Length: 198
Image (tube, rainbow, N blue to C red; front, top):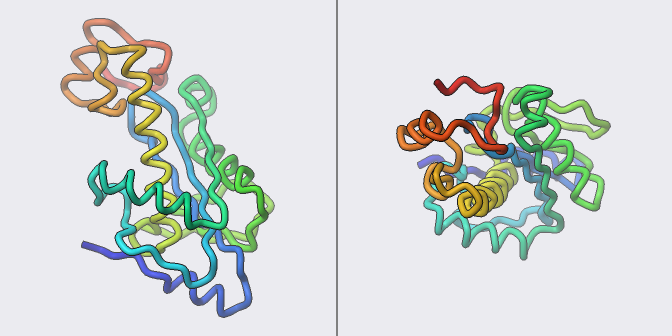
């Protein structure tokens, strides 16, 4: 298992930067539900054992770690962009918008933002794109956990509203069960109409 480290962060702290935000988003691939981004800032050199890329953790472990992250972080911000906006501006732009909203939600202005992936939002912050950042950067990995837990909680709530799609288990992804429900019932209001699922 790949364990994210503070290597990138330590170089920046060594340059005198204190407020480093890690940013990641969850939900580019699903057929339904929002794309959710989280931004997290920790005190310099803080490290929480067990933090990994959210995809490498069980749901229970993610929930435990997300609670610890909320309690130990200097700031946590969230950005949510729902399906109608995704359909209007496309999923790439929606993911970038969610990241921008998450950083704006921090309540403090970061001196550097580390963003998972290749793309950087159009924003005024000094920032760096980190390919596979959720696997290498502790701060980005922590953001990936927070974003995943929040998005999953949204999908569980939607499952109560639209039980026929089984969002509590598929979280909006195109599983065989979900695709069968789409063929039977058609899309609901949280489905991304611009996504091809037939």
